[in-house]
Image 1 (cartoon, protein in one colour):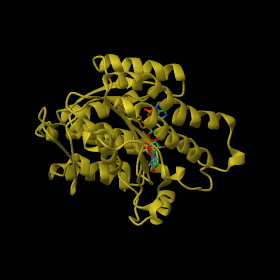
Image 2: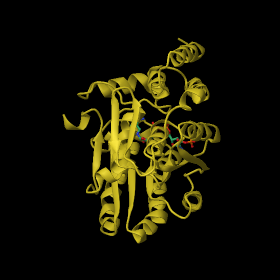
Image 3: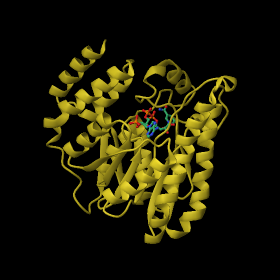
Length: 323
Ligand code: NAP
């Protein structure tokens, strides 16, 4: 099936009333190039407009039910009135997180570099009755990181209540073949950007006495994987930062936690389907996750349902690190 056939299949399914979140899962199963994949997703978002006009928004002050996939529903305490900044929200896990938090009632600030994909995520959220804005930022540069924090506070009406550090890159390969530029980029985006976002945003959360920060790690930070030394070590730093920040900001009402996903079908992993399946086959679940499955765990940690959860690195890996 090529991309056009996939679009046709998806369009047909939509006419039959299948929900967009389920279609997203179908697309993630499809082995196609990243460009084609993005075209298909954009087509889904455009085609979704008339259908989602009927999807009710979470009523203010109520308990929100985020139910993106058939059979998968998580109940989350309402995030109405809260502002959530999600980095890496133009794609994959970050995009699904932005959508999930918006379904819980949060005003979501969708951060990334790609305006097209960011705009599509914002549009999808608004079509569902949610509130979202796109903020462009290249997080390889620490000044841009600080600028993103300032813009987010401005767009959020003076506050950011929830920060999800989702942006990340994961180049794999032998240590001896890793160029210095790659090492610098991985640590700049995966470690330095979250570090300075927290430095910018956590103090104000602490002053208000409440806030939630969720870092996105990886199961490759929990054990050694050949070819993943650089990536795994950057996320191992994130795991320790999670605990250090829980110690630093937790006593002032800011909860800091992390999710540690296993292999997940995203735009970023679209070109490594076989490797993903092989990795996933070693876990009890035996399959890769959908972005929504990771997003639901992030939403839990970001929400009041996790009010007594501090400094946790939560494996969401189909059981891989447990066995
Ligand atoms: P993805 O589909 O490749 O998306 C990556 C996101 O990061 C995009 O939104 C991208 O936005 C953003 N990004 C990349 N470079 C950036 C830069 N220089 N400045 C700002 N934003 C940048 O990724 P994913 O697979 O969903 O992974 C998301 C997170 O989960 C990452 O931290 C990853 O390490 C972690 N994770 C993924 C898996 C997996 O199997 N997929 C497993 C475990 C952990 P723009 O392109 O718009 O800039």
